[in-house]
Image (cartoon, rainbow, N blue to C red; front, top):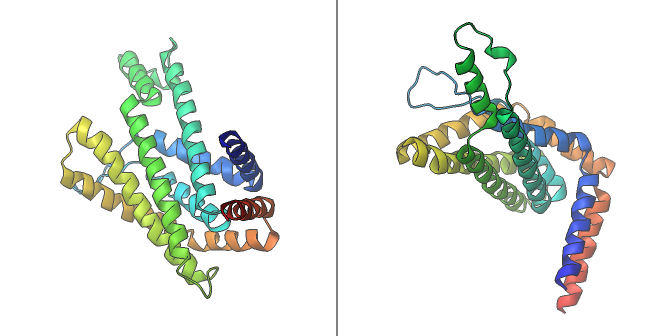
Length: 257
């Protein structure tokens, strides 16, 4: 029974990857990978209470993608895609770490008198730190689950017009706000609090300010996301996956009778 269920889940997952447009999957995985790399660079701001890093320029895209995938394919599909992106990110982080161990010199380190210092710094930047990589991965996976299932739950509140503009705005913005806060706070708690001595006030402040900044970025692409989900439905994108899921639910219901 367990093996049969596992095979069905694997078949469903492969079908999902075939159903989501390849470009969307590629850009999503790239956004997850690049936002963790860019998070190594902090943004210089005139306010001491506001802490942001350069990961903000791409992290919004990850939530944008999860929202449109949830709308069309459901929260389980968006979460599975998020876990895949997290695993790919860990794999390439491992490759970067191995690359940082290989003896050699980075092209940007050729500054007279500072070659060793700069080369070491570049190795540390691309090689990463284990607690930062694991902390960011845990924060992303948790926030993905929260974002995807809250998005789906909010969408269920719109009985009359679940595919309308108002429904899309509310489910996207509320779920992204919650998910972004969870992502920022979890990372701040796991990494900044324990390894850099941040206070709980700093963790909460960072999570809130980062959430607001992310929402401002995503606001620009609210309508494109809405248009994409409507076009996917109109063109029947993912119909094979959705039909498979529906048949699976029916078979489970019959089995429980």
